[in-house]
Amino acid sequence: MPSRLYPDSVDRPRVNPEAYQDLQPYIDSVVALSRLTYQSLYIIDYHRMNFLYVSDNPLFLCGKRVEEVQQEGYAFYYEHVPSEDIAFLTAVNRAGFEFFRRQPVEERCSYTISYNFQLYKEGTSELMLINHRLTPLKLDEEGNIWLALCIVSLASTSQRHTAYITQAYSKNCWQYTPSSGRWRLSETIELSEYEKAVIRLANQGLSVSEIAVKINKSEDSVKGYRKSLFVKLDVANISEAIAVATEHRLL
Image (cartoon, helix red, strand yellow):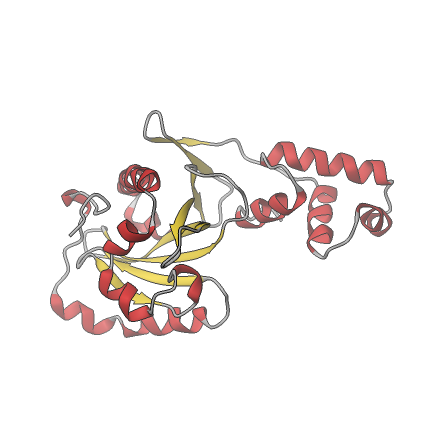
């Protein structure tokens, strides 16, 4: 079995077999959530090192059946992820577990790690860039991550080999630094009310001139807000700005 993506022994949870009898409510909740979104959801079991659940949303499956992906578990990554992205995932996984280990146990389930990587579709050489988000779902008695909920969606930016950690109910965001293998607390991004309005209205498909009418500003002002958004969010276009602002809960 592949092992580079496994957590180190210090991070592996310790779980009694009887504890698995209480997991059905977790699975049922994720099944219900999967009905509400096109995104693919799955649950990683870090004790048994497999996938406890995989949704039937096709995005993550790469043309395979749910049963195949669930049976393959971690081997699925090695079959459908390019080697350079595997190396990135290995480094980010290691750094992510180190980050979680440093946090108070009572706060560990409030963090989410997000990054983009590529997947090969079954039987083709087509590469698909996806965004992968992971958050702890259940800890063992010692505070180690036992179950993690993962959500896979189409990547909204072209960025690869970048990773972020965010915390619920907080504006803090940590960015992964590949050269050091550590996380750096990023400066807090603040959007003005007009910048937020531009994003909301652009998300509805409104043009610059239509947005100008809606917010009672000139077209040049709207263009200025857009330019400011691109700089603050480090993006190249309004579609990426919408995605980043939404993901980082800036609206």
